[in-house]
Image 1: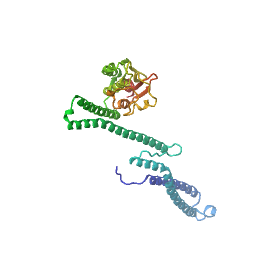
Image 2: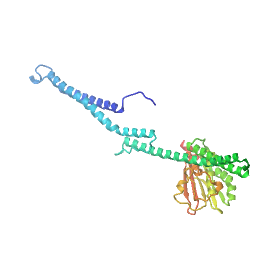
Image 3: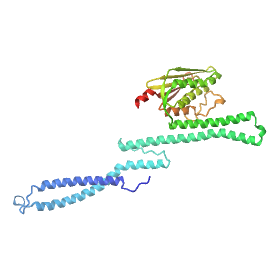
Image 4: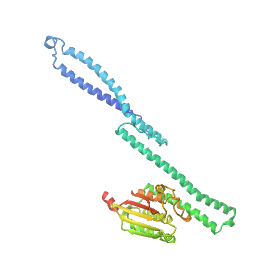
Length: 365
C-alpha cells in the first residue's frame, strides 16, 4: 500500500527525547533561578550593602542558563538519536527478515540474543510464524507435486489407450473399455478426493448437530457388503454422541476409516469395531481393525497426503490414492477435533477421533 512520506520512527523518538530533556532542564533552571533571586534585593547596594545585586546575578545566571539550555538541546538530540537507534535496532532486523520472507525466502530466522522483552517476544513470534510458513509451503509443494504425479498416471494410461484405439479401432472390446473406465474412474476419484481435502482445509461448511452413532451405523451399513466379501466381521457399538459440524463430511470421515480398516486387514477372519461414546465434554469415535503388525515409524506418516502403508495388506482393486487418512485428518482438524492413530500390539490399527460435544459448544457461545 502506497503511503505519503513521513518522519522516521527514529527521528520521532529523537525529537521526543530531546523535547523531554529540554523541558525538564528548563523547569529545573527556572526553579533554581526563581529560588535564588527572590532572596536578593533589587537595589544598587545589593545584599547587606555589598555586591552583587539582583541585576548582576540575573546577568550571570542568565548567561549560564542559556549555555546550559544549548547543551541540553544538543545532548537531547545526539543522545536521543543514539538511544533511539539502539532501541529500534531489533525492529530493523525484524523488518529485514520480513522483506526476505516477502521475496520468498522463509529459511531466515532473526534469533535476537538477550533476555526476554517486548522486542524479543515479537522476534520469537515472527520466527515461529516463519517456521510454520516454511513447513506449510514445503508441504503444499510436495502435495502439488504428488497430486500432479498421481493424476498424470491415469491420464497417461487413458491417453495411451485412446491413441491405440485411434490407430486400430478393432482393438476396442470389453476388456479395453474396462481398462479405460478404470483409469478414468481413478482420475475422477483422485480429483474428488483433492476437492474434499481442500474443502476440509478451508473449513468452509455449514454446522449443525450431528449424532456420530447414526453416522457410524450408516457408514457400516454402506460398507458391510465389502466386509462380507472379504470375510470380515463389522460391529458398531457404543451410544449416542452428538457433536456440531457437517454431517456429510463426518460421514466421509467414518466411511474412510471403515473402508481403510476393511482394505488393510487380514486376508480372512478379520474384524472391525466402530465405537462411539460421549467422554468429558467430547465425542469419541474409535475404529479398530485386525491386521499385520505395523512398524512404529510407518504410523505417523499415514495421515500425510499420498502416503500409502506399503506393508499393509491390500488388493489391487482398492489401491486408493493415498488420501484417505489425510482427508480424515483435514476434516477432523476443521471441526476443531483431534486424531490419534496408534498400532495395536496384536496387529492392525486403532484410530480415535475426539470432537467437541454439541452441549459443550453451546455452553461456550
